[in-house]
Length: 117
Image (cartoon, rainbow, N blue to C red; front, side, top):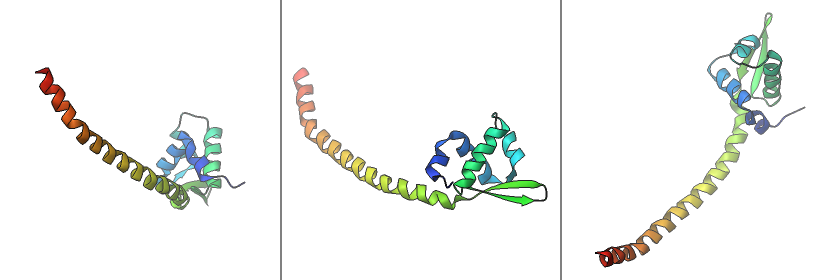
């Protein structure tokens, strides 16, 4: 089954595994040693990450090494990029509105301050 990359990064343990493997390739046992969850749980997370294409496992002798592969994260980056542009434009418009509103309200504040004195 081909899983969705968004499903893979939704879990904090899987994000931690990706972060760990971003620094170096590790065996499955070395990956498991970094977590306080069971080895079968780590194996399940690694399997999901492999199915999503975020981890590549290669056999070297008796050991299986996990390596991060970030090409699939391009899909996430593209998706976030669309919304980043959308929200940036909305927040810029809100900032301009608030600046205009503050400028328009400024004389009233001065008038109130003078009336209080």
